Figure 1 (tube, rainbow, N blue to C red):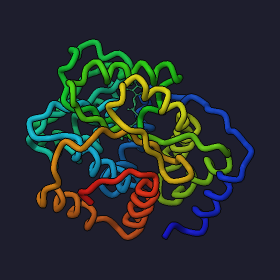
Figure 2 (tube, rainbow, N blue to C red):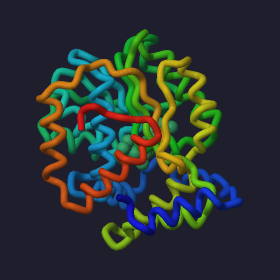
Figure 3 (tube, rainbow, N blue to C red):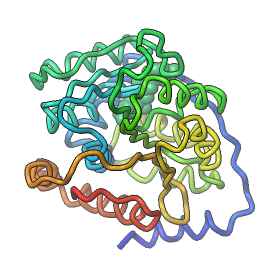
Figure 4 (tube, helix red, strand yellow):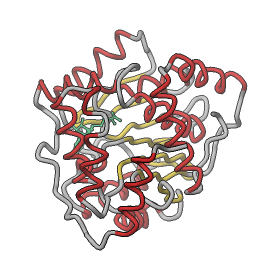
Length: 290
Ligand SMILES: C[S@@+](CC[C@H](N)C(=O)[O-])C[C@H]1O[C@@H](n2cnc3c(N)ncnc32)[C@H](O)[C@@H]1O
């Protein structure tokens, strides 16, 4: 059951007449060493982002299958990518990012984890020039699309996804959705301020302000020509996801790999995971794996 404070914010969002403006991220490409370090820390297995990463992994694992070539668009420090790659050793993954600082972190992370199935390329996700048409089996992207400057760039990115993906390929894209009221944006940004470095809280606030609206995602989603459905968290599109049909059957091994990560989580992370799962489930999005 979500906390009273969260329920109050939902009521505020539903009743507000405000339409908070979208502000683009001050750092579209994350090159500052301090900011990259804070983001990396918040995302590692025990950081505040851990429940979101596990949740996303449960969906990505449904849209890939053994032998696939998978792209992770705007992979950042590869926390999400490494989690998925560890659970899907029979797939090969390429992380794409425009920040060399992030790619250095990402490379170090996969080396630390001894993952032989992950490589990286330095490129804009809106122009995947080095990737051939219909050469990719699945595309994932998490918590990153809000870094794109405008709707036209989001549309260009989706067009590229459509170009590089093979027919019947898998898609899972998840990101924040734009909230109507600045009060809700601030509430969610500062919700965990006591558990994380201030620079991450500020980064989080900027992310929520830069998020695209659900209708932006629907509009840009036209570029992928019905290959994925658009979902959002129930009533308030705090998070939005585009997911294609499942391509891999649920197996006990996959289930137990995800469950093992869940079991290691502290109780506050388990609660956040349960809230995210419930709000997306009520919005129609479900993973059969967890
Ligand atoms: C908030 S991080 C998300 C990282 C990762 N996907 C995750 O789930 O933790 C956003 C990333 O997008 C990258 N980025 C921003 N604009 C980009 C672009 N046009 N092309 C490629 N990467 C971009 C930034 O450098 C940063 O690493």
